[in-house]
Image (cartoon, rainbow, N blue to C red; front, side, top):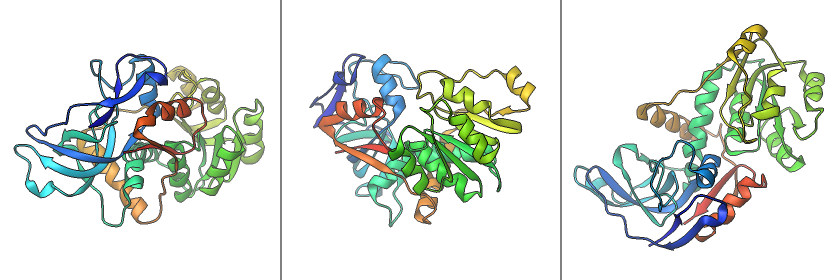
Length: 318
């Protein structure tokens, strides 16, 4: 089968498509004939440096999320899974391939009426956005800033915050990305490449009650400065390359709560993903798939994400 190999850490060019052994379902596993593979920003960081939540010895096939049809099962897994449309995490490797062996316990059937690409787009980003929205305890009337509002998680957070009755301020880089956030329900649009963007936010809404910090660095720190007493800040990404670095002491002095993230249990991850799928089925949540790349073009997909040229979700079409 065809797969994308990572044999050394480095730039996008280290991702090379080549032949790979056919996966075999071991005990408690199924083999999925992959239609789409999910790509996340975290995967680009792992490819570059080996750092992050994923583990694995090189050479390896990267990729942490896939969607497709089950073609075989291992011992202890019912044959009724064969032929079913599913999405699943892979455990951090094996996703950029025509077929992947995964633990059956983590497999989620794709509900009737769902198209596969949208289901895969919601696999990682949907559960992340749902978890963040719940942790923030959004209320009607909240003034909510979503950084990187045109990204995979950001586009979903804009929708979830708007559905909760919040006034959504979207921060992104460039008119094209801001237009996407506006179409999804953001009422205030600011380009965070403009040094005066915090002033624009103050003029529009006065201050903030919630910040979803997906950028970190100077943008995250500036966003923190817009929070009033009782505000909540949730940092979940560092697109800038660094965390905002807000200390608990700084937050306490301002009366702001820093809401940290914890690693969800497998059952919690499943429920979060199911919730995102249900919201999408009800028409209340729409993943934005901004670009698709053929499997052999995985290097180009990573380069596009790192160049900040992408909007919404990026998928590999297998």
